[in-house]
Amino acid sequence: LGVPISDITRITDHLPHSADLSNLEAIRDTVPECRGLPLEDEPFRNMIVCAQKIAGLPHHISIHCGGILVSPAPITNLIPLQRTPKGFEVTQYDMYPVEDLGLLKIDLLAQRGLAVEVDTVQAVQESHGNILDFSCIDPVEDSATRALVRNGKTMGCFYIESPGMRNLLQKLRVNSFEKLTAASSIIRPGVASSGMMQAYIKRHKGKEAVTYLHPKLEEVLSETYGIMIYQEDVIKVAHAVAGMTLGEAEGLRKCMSKKRDWQRMETYRERFLTGAEKNGVPKNIRNEIWRQIDSFAGYAFCKAHSASFALVSYRAAYLKAHYPAEFMAAVLTNEGGFYDACAYVEEARRLGVTILSPHINHSRYEFFAERLDAIRIGLMQVRGLSRIVIDRTMRIRKERMFESVHDFLARITPDLPEVETLIHCGALDGLGPSRPAMFVEALIWHRKHPVSKDRAQTTLSLNIEHPCLVPDLPELEETDKLLAEIDALGMVATAHPMALYGITSEHWPSGFTRAKDMDKVRELVSMLGILVTDKSTRTAKGERMRFVSLEDPTGIFEVTLFPKVYQKFGHVLVDKGPFVVKGRIEEDSGNRTVTALWFGRMETTLLSRSN
Image (tube, rainbow, N blue to C red; front, side, top):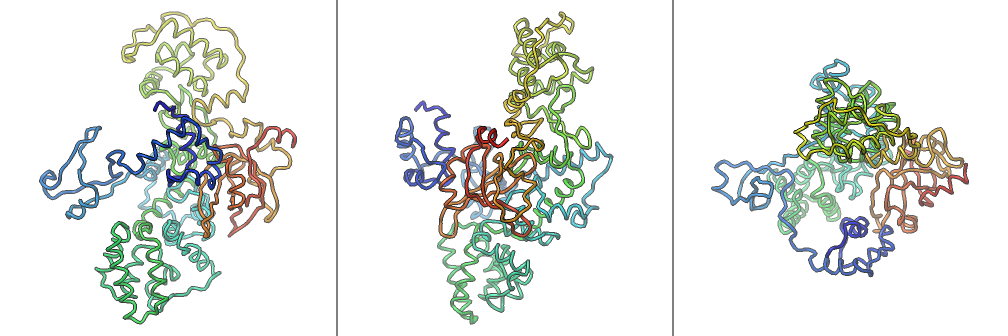
């Protein structure tokens, strides 16, 4: 239809993930971020009409994200294959018929957490000379690691870094492998949505008595305070309460974990309820037990899964506690996890680590700990910079460092846009009088020496001529440098993004509370911050609300927008802000958050009035 991508994203970026195209008007009325979408205007009206006609139709053939099939014989003897556009072979059957045929399907997924661990261990050996062997190190017994996990300071640590998980760690005061294993499971949607997560927390803290719906449950659920949190718990409960054989109970577990055969699930329900009745379990009790089983079907972890996650999480926490520069560099190199690069850069700063701008004489491809307390941004972060130029730069500088802009251009022959981006992010600082002057020199050089499309063929002599003369242009203002960094790197390297508005931890507008100063519970405060992440959810009554993580130069603080406030102010949450929140500080298990009463965009006029 020729509709620009920018126009399409105006609609799609604000729609809920599970939006129903047949009911967009209702979505616009109930989802604050969608308020004001011009659905009746062209080209949106025609675009939506067309989208509604094709909604639900097959879009493309997708591939299982990690399914690997193991066959006892040549696989072409058993099932049909087809070749993907990228050239590798996949089955024409989907995952369900493949398993029904009796073939072994293994879900083999890449794991960034493991890559972060390996990269950190290698960096520690390089910078400290220490060889870390986790077969000889128990992170759980390390006091610094336990404190980090117990206090929820786990940003960057595999699986335990989300706001919800960090909050849970603080509530449970997790200090053992078993408790982190349990936490890794109860955070899952099934246990959390059934209300069992809150019950587990209260029972763990002694605020609720440990009770069992039936005496038979005590012998199988005593470890988890009478609550089912693992898939194995379903097997044990079905066996103990309903008299199902372990084979039958395993069939129930497998059926519910797939959550695809409702007719079979109904058969298991009838078998469970009938068996429980024969065992003398009252009707209301057996119905409630089944409700709990059914509520987390498809979402619960098996205990081995949770334990393996907890193991990697504790190792990550150990590395962060003892080697923050190497660890955060590895997190950034592996493109993080729950948060974007900006959030991890700020977390590194909070750990006392200096962030050094990329530089052609010092940077590697990846982020790395240049000193024990400093991370050098990798050239991989520079937008539009080709791997060819990166590799050539690192190879040729081994002969000698680059001494000037002309020296770099003559020896590397990058494209003009690449040079411009490198100058903008500070990667050529020190090789010329100022960034504007260096760009003028690069511009003149490229007009004299157009770069060949075949970069491998460099015919320029290194001494072909003297550097061109350029005017002595003044350096950019700091604000312009920060904006150029965002454009070139996708983040601010040398300061917190709030510095663009003249806000630093030292220069703070009066009347506003910093994240690190949330001392007085129930106090009314005004706070400023950049959006880090957010999550929409529904209350028990089905009303929409939102959890928002904001960050100022001193730290991250969590904000809760309950339904009435969210409906009134949620429409402003369409970008990273910055935002102003006015609300009340609340505390739960030592974790302080802000319950919003007012939420809006930060206006520079507001700040100027407060100074």
